[in-house]
Length: 312
Image 1 (cartoon, helix red, strand yellow):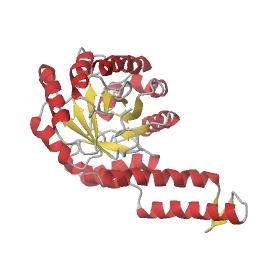
Image 2: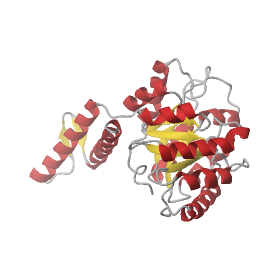
Image 3: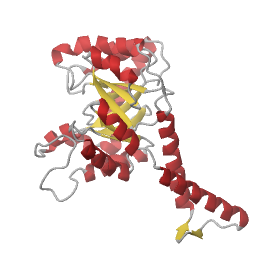
């Protein structure tokens, strides 16, 4: 598995059209933790062969620093997937960290992608398993099968949510993609997000929220990001550079959260060393092993966020 993509933060995942040289040249200069070069929805069918060549050139010739670099493949329901893998992944070289499979619906699709990637890696003289996989869940079938999908390959690194296509798949009324629907008493995507979270964490995967297409409302972007951050999501897609800073901030632990995590660990360590206790009363709360696990998870997230913030 690529050394870049297994441990680094994914607070912000910038989607970039693979058919645009201007955006491809700009992307390495931005502060996104991950850049996703898109061969799917952002590229018209007639432009896909040319976009593959542009993506390969961008991956090989640009300085991506320590960013995660990914390519979004067309879904297996299209005639483009295998050509995407052979022409784009096969020629991109070792700097490509992972591929994102659009509209993943069944675990067999992940298994098939794994097998094709193995042959492509062998032909390109890459270590087998170098290219990771992220499954993009954005249809009713994908939601129904997400637990099996999450365990379908050791290459899997993350599960991501595609709210626009899922809305179309389920018949949800049209609104701004990624926002809640007016008239529903709550967050109509909560059950979906929780299902993705459980499936991802069961297999030790990252879980990434989908984009919000309201380009002129950073306050609303922040509100929506805070919802999935509160659930435990690791990050969110961005579709414009102006969204990156908001997402990097929201999905990073706050100073107060870091201080609280350290205080928990210090209190538990002192109690275990001095009194042989595993459960203690501290500051009006009970701390035990569950608090230790929560604190370590917070500090791990903070470490990943710090690594992302210090990249060049």
